Length: 137
Image 1: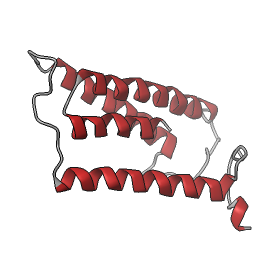
Image 2 (image 1 turned 120 degrees about the horizontal axis):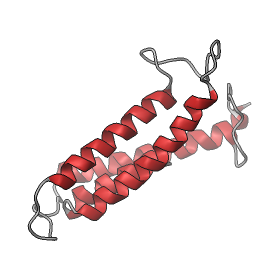
Image 3 (image 1 turned 30 degrees about the vertical axis):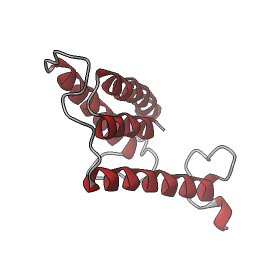
Image 4 (image 1 turned 135 degrees about the horizontal axis):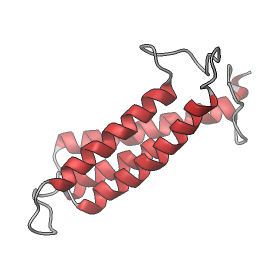
């Protein structure tokens, strides 16, 4: 969910131009995601605990999530340090084909994620280590 909120903040920059409020949305969302992924890492910190899911390039996805949230916070911090003499966006809102395609791709990915989560967990809580799809079995 935190990645969705981060994406919404970044899409607001694409659609309406860069504003500090949009970067604030990204930072607050990334902080929430960093807390959640840090908690998940702390649950598997004991020696011999293999964690959930297979590692990707040596790290689990919750570890990658923490790294990405930290990178997004750093990026937004740098963008906020860039001098903006007015509160209006520096660039006009993007309404070109690439901007529209990026927005549609983002919404399609969210819909696919919602569908796959419903197939895996249904309307209830997901199991600790899901290995199958609840609605497909």
